[in-house]
Length: 224
Ligand SMILES: Cc1cc2nc3c(=O)[nH]c(=O)nc-3n(C[C@H](O)[C@H](O)[C@H](O)COP(=O)(O)O)c2cc1C
Image (tube, rainbow, N blue to C red; front, side, top):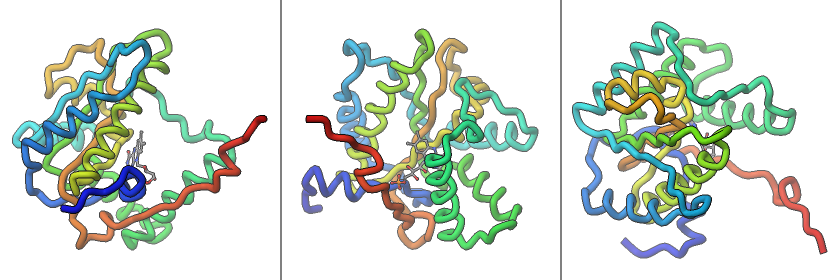
């Protein structure tokens, strides 16, 4: 594989939502974890507690998530209030949803199709591995959560640099209790999100969605 420049890796990263069952080479996995561990954090506290789940345990967690979802038993450690989004963010959120469902061929009002897409999240989009990112709750949690975001970005870019792919999933964090139960994680460790990862199945539309970004002028102000 030819080496990509940093800018090429950043441009090549995307959220894949269909994976091949092929396991990731353990040396690559070790390399991804070492790259992620280099992430900066407040006072170098490194508050991430990461559980890499594969094989039978992966299947057990997925079954527990699907079971909890079918009973509507949500147990998020952190809120995700879509109704509280300001207009501009809400527009971007809707555009992402529209592009995603269009790529999958799910029409507006196709509730069964949408439910299936929701379930695919809980099946890790077929990925052989999931990284669950836990953190201790310190104050309002924002500082440690930002540290985990830095960790996750290193993780995702490292996957990309190795020809692999991942998708961060807040939806997995909506079912913190069953994940903790299956993995034997203490209740004081809070689940921020998970990252399903592996070899993207490029023959599937769900692994080929590329979404744009707002122009810099919407995000950045210069002050001289
Ligand atoms: C913290 C976080 C949580 C996310 N949660 C989900 C999720 O639950 N399900 C999903 O399909 N995508 C999820 N995404 C992926 C975003 O939809 C995606 O990053 C965004 O649309 C930009 O697309 P790209 O990653 O392909 O550039 C999440 C992304 C982040 C950063």
